[in-house]
Amino acid sequence: MLMSSPQAILFDLDGTLVDTAPDLAAATNALRAHHGLAALPFQEIRGQVSNGGSALVTLALGLESGSDEHDEARQFLLDAYEQAVAVHSKLFEPLNEWLTQWHSEERLWGIVTNKPRRYTLPLLEALALTPGALLCADDLSVKKPAPEPLWEAAKRLGVSPEACWYIGDHVRDMQAAKAAGMTAVAVGYGYISEEDDYQSWPADLWFTTCDELVAALHDHRTD
Image (tube, rainbow, N blue to C red):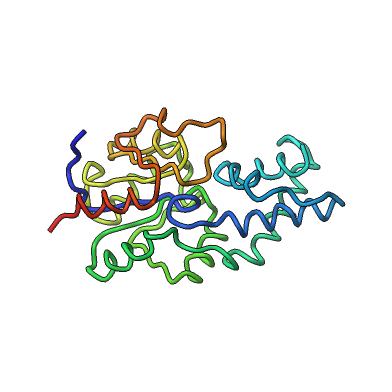
């Protein structure tokens, strides 16, 4: 279907804009090592990254959320991650080239993530990313799939929600975009488990690869 060209582009962070899985996998396997367990394969961890630290603890140790043991393990994992948030993390290609051009032309873009600001800011600083709007998990009283963070990002950029694309690699990203009245863009190159079908998500546009996404961003560029 035809989509209007966006005035602003908003991204989810992990698995959409930045490939953070290598560093999160290292923290997950550090937790495993702490408990005397062998490292898990990278691809097995990658599929759970977008589900957050609790999901990684469950994957690593089989501990469900709600127990003291789970909470303690989650803090260990997050502490390990905080010490190395940008050792191997990098922008997905060719989004890195597209974003450099977009930013140099002073076009509007932002990030809306469920990642806490404590881990987001060091990552963005290491990657020299300066979004015009940044909303993290702890900035508002609600987070995705609630639409409020997306609305706030649009407000800070000075555009209407309808003039924004929101791009993400999780069904909650699409739910948030739809609720916010934005064009919902699903990407299949992110941190999606094998049993999840991103093309079944309630999106307006679906792209399998990052190259396809960037081509569409170029095609829908406003003058």
